[in-house]
Image 1 (cartoon, rainbow, N blue to C red):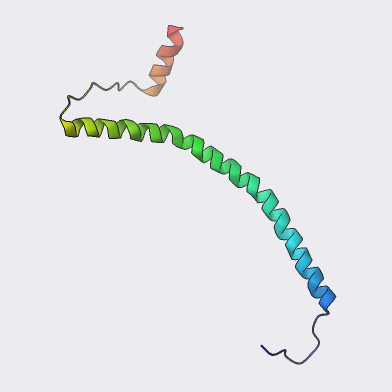
Image 2: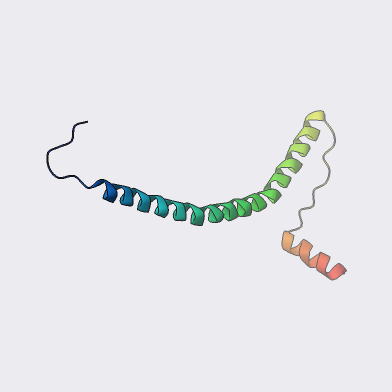
Length: 89
């Protein structure tokens, strides 16, 4: 690509600008990386109960396909189960 006629920036200013951009990007990445790691950890922890539920449902589906009798399911709401556990102690 040809340079258009006229004054161009001196080389030291170009290097200074690129160094400044490098510093800004480095600081931004160092700041952003821990936040992304914490968000990923929280998301992974929140997925544990979901994956357990999926495993239970897959096991039930396999048992149904084999023709095993369906086990009775506890439909007590979570708050009632917590209340009952708390009062058992």
